[in-house]
Amino acid sequence: MIPLRVAALGDSLTEGLGDRAADGAWRGWAALLAGGLAAPLAEAVELRNLAVSGARTPDVLHRQLPSAQHHRPQLASVVVGVNDTLRAAYDINAVARNLDATLGALADDGALLLTACLPDPGRMLGLPASLARPLARRMRSVNEVVHALSERYGAVHVHVVDCDWVHDPRMWSVDRLHPSERGHRALAREFHALLAARGVAAGPAPGAEPTGAAPGRAAGVWWMATRGTRWVLERCTDLLPDLLRLAAAEVRQRSSDRLDREAAALTAAVLAGLGPDRRGSGVGGPGPLKAVS
Image 1: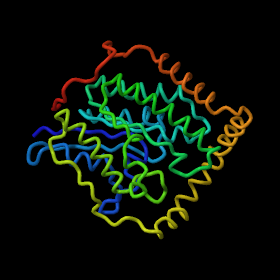
Image 2: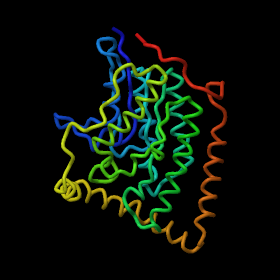
Image 3: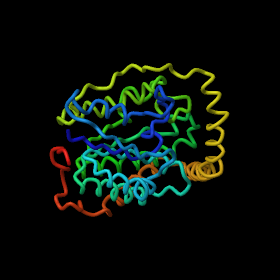
Image 4: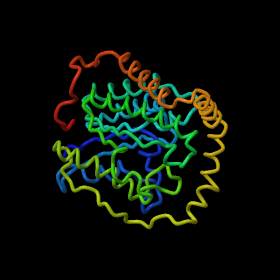
């Protein structure tokens, strides 16, 4: 039996935060999806989940990619970018080049890629409009890069921002940033449907209904008292001053539309600067998925 090797790269979303398995470990959408890739008694699936909470695009490129390539995956997911927008050092040019290098290397190795565009973290956190707008602008730029590179490398792409379930509170854990078990299942099902259409997912789709109890109000209080408080303090010393600067500039210029256009133009210039597809074809992606011995 030749296994189907799968590598999952990214941040806490792919690590599985918000979805605890019965043994207490994080599970997440990648593991749920892996369980539905192979037909029963036909093919084993070897999942290597390399995602780490807090990871940004340079972490994925320099730390996770080498391990993924050592695994020689036929299927590789790269879902990352939110943490890049949540840092004062945000640079869309660096984000684009990091993602291009990561996706290009995996595609060159013959992996079929999985990608996703992600919802605006400012909206998910319920930030005031003056602070949320700069974050939304950054997330739109990152998503535009992900869209363009997904097309370049023939990735299986889920438009998470357009999914009906994104704004259902039941889909999100107590921190509002990570999916709940129900949300992880929804994302896994989106990928499974697309992979099944390509003849890659031969097993049953993950179930939509959670098998564990949803966290209650006490879980929200506990999260804020432990990890949540630390997260807020870290962002107050890093992201918040930068967001306040951006919000002040927006108020002074009184033109959110103009700032949106400038960000869109910068993103287009960054994508143009990436140059042609390194594989030479310029279009498409890896061929049919093949087992590798």
